[in-house]
Length: 492
Ligand SMILES: Cc1ncc(COP(=O)(O)O)c(C=O)c1O
Image (tube, rainbow, N blue to C red; front, side, top):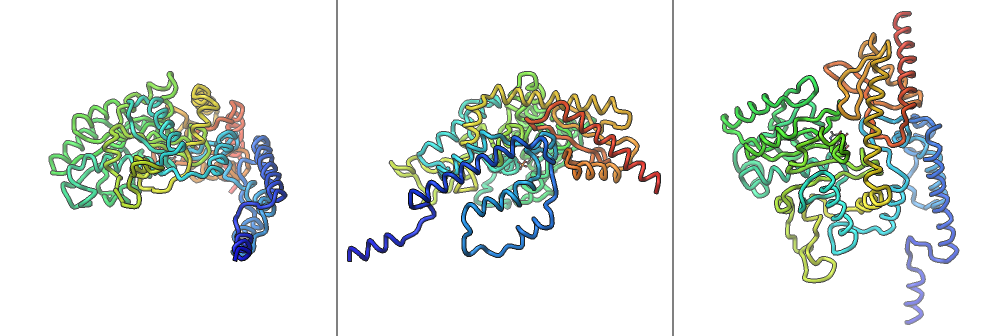
């Protein structure tokens, strides 16, 4: 009997190495992996920013059958080195400025490994991971100028952080029991934003069952800020029509041009009208860390809820967004369920309940907080703030280069870290062609957008690896490619 039990234990498996030799082998491979990724990061400047995955790579990745029998960690790592790592989108490169993507950093990368090794489920148990996330939230609230006692969560990104903030506002301000009754319970609700609001908002309105029709979109001035007189008039007209003005979603740094709405005026309006004041500060909110840039986002600290990303202008590896909520009770009231299998006990790991799961749609959550905690402690907020200021100076420098160029023109003002420009004597299609050729050349990756109905090349600078010379290279390349494209047109 005893032998049988011993035999059974012997044949049971685990994914961990078993013998000392197996542990040594895996440890050696892990060291090689760290060396490999450090070599990759160090050599990034002289590599192409982006290259399209080759047909062979596509076939190798997408044609592989379900791997029933494992090939071993070593072979899997070799496949990563040959087929995956060289074909990244490119945001670790000093000349990547597309969309709004941060480049991450090596310390954050190592913190991700530590978080995965520890592997806690940060639903909010009585453990150190929960304490760390709570502390990161307190630090964020202080840095954003929000009061002590501000509640919050780390999320996958700006989209989810914004959705959570808006939803808390809906439950808090609707005036009826939305959690119980859904949208049938009371007056029709209206949310206000400008034409420049990011697309997360439309998706969220659809997802929350309010529909896009409940979104009242207001025009912008010549600097792409919400028109306050139109906003006030819209709120008044909707109220007069029997609707309930619920929330203004303001922008601190719009995705297209980096414009910031008049946040103090919106805060005043929301206060006077009993509306929820939500700020989407996906990247712009981090301007408040800098004394010189803070006036741009003044009023943001009055938000009922504020969403922003640390994987953009906080330079931390994907993914990590954050929502802060002024009224901690409203935050809890929006999500706690009291399910029997999750309820608090007097003692043990669930003493006090599941803090974060009770403030969120998600139940299980990873240890995102660790990379924020380690990154902030390792670099210090002053160093990160200096980089934010450097990015703004670089954007201003790029704007000057564009203004000085004989063939380029700015498409919009540059209030923060985004520069939109175009080749002057080229059509929208030709400017798009210039951008695609530039991206395919591997030299730089800006992205594109429409500004005032016309195509523009758009540089969003949240890159701590960029140097001033990189922007000179960019301008030279656009001038050269632009001349080629225009010449081709004239020879057609
Ligand atoms: C202003 C703004 N809001 C929201 C988002 C969405 O953030 P995420 O991509 O982290 O979901 C972005 C992304 O670029 C943004 O620029």
